[in-house]
Length: 355
Image 1 (cartoon, one colour):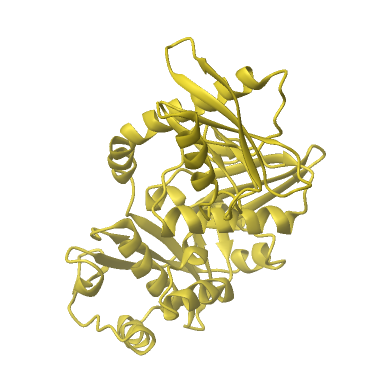
Image 2: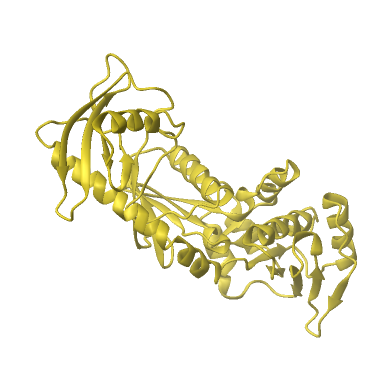
């Protein structure tokens, strides 16, 4: 390791990063040096954000510099510092296997599907193609019809192999599935009633895009153009039925050259006597883990906004979150991530221990 002075300067510089303090700490002082049980050399530092702020803990070790901005306690400094070293070890282990994680998640990503619920059992492909052209400036004239009546469109502007497929089914979604899942849309009080009234549906799917984000963009475009048709009642996907205005709101991001997270990821909210829970559905289609917050005493709007921001962050910055890491809405928030069996979603999910 470097000298105490060199490490002290390095800690101060690390704290100045925008994702940490974002400024020079008021004071940084060395307190102790020790070696962990597995031979990692570590120096303990305490620092202050400002003159009147409490002392906070930071370390400089063979594994790197780190702080969770927790209060410095001289009685437990070695124990607390050891936990930070263990976090860094896990972080570097996660980084080492991140490419493998990405490849594994990519296997099930990039395929999008939805049912567009229709008032009547009719759909005009030429009208849809014109609506798509008018809204997005992309021509879908190179289309094919299969024996099942599916229209398959090649969209090279969004990927050489990207295919948009649309099939009219002259019947309602089987088993009352759409009506049942419509109850989970807390933003649309008439969701169940409207879903019950549908007489037919379109199967809308996207596959083969070069990237999940490219496929997602094409999917959002298609849903928006379909929803502009007055025959469309709503869209059933991500285990919920959403209203056309919800799809339009997501499409607006595309028109501003931003990724349409709102079109592709649903933020579910569940209330119980134990508190408020929130969850995402749709992130797996984009090669990410679904995210949950379970049983917290916060407002539904706060939980929804937080999850929406985190979902946008992991998609737009192409971040893979790992078990044991921390995340926050800003550089002062450190919320632990735990990966385990989903509570409100299928399979495993990342639980953010929201406070």
